[in-house]
Length: 299
Ligand code: GLN
Image (cartoon, rainbow, N blue to C red; front, side, top):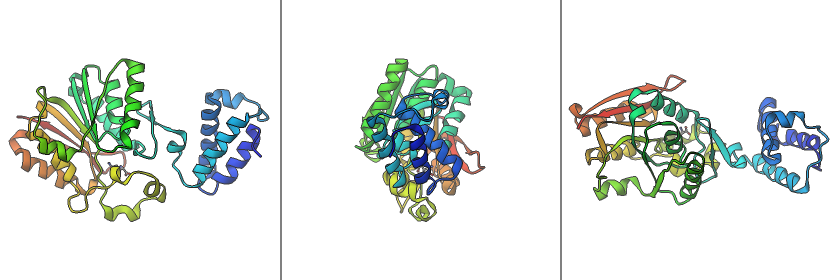
């Protein structure tokens, strides 16, 4: 029975050791306790192990443990993920932000020209993590938009944008939109964006067998998998938006992509936009794989 911190730690260890190694399961146990007891790590470490848990706290901890035992990723169970130093709400309708995407944010922030960006568009925002981080961290952003097609993701992104607004006064406007439908509409904004960012679905369905069950069974396939017939379709659609006037001259497109299609994507964008109209750079992630593309548009 779970009625003290000690008894919870004991039961958690029993359940989590089937899925995680010892140090991971200890860390997860601490994070669950911090969340439910609403306390910091330091406070938790100072608490007596015989501290009694209320029936409500014990019930919540047991439910979380049950979810984790069924393979739910920790972030879904906690309800949040840390991303670029910010707490982002997540739930099964959105992808859990990845460390690579944090690298993308870092690349953008470090690029001198981003510092002057005022009009931002995030395509396929999911949880909203990219738009949230850039709107919070780029000093000159005055207008920020995010588009997302998934009805499950929309309320989660909106909650993250509402939290951002409360904390910083900065606003992200969320549109429920399908990228491909937007391309068909031919309705470029009167003021073009100077920064367009996207981490679209880019895994080829054939790669599914290399993915862990935790990802495959729990995270939204809509956010993970590219169309089988054209794994770079989202990038071509982003190129089409640029051709229609969505990106200002001198503006930047930053995308995360599949290292398997990095060169193909770069080539296709050159071809569709015209070599004289863009300069591109492929950038490696921390494991050395070509994971990001930066395109500067010259209208
Ligand atoms: N990088 C993610 C993963 O490996 C995929 C994200 C995406 O498809 N945009 O799970």
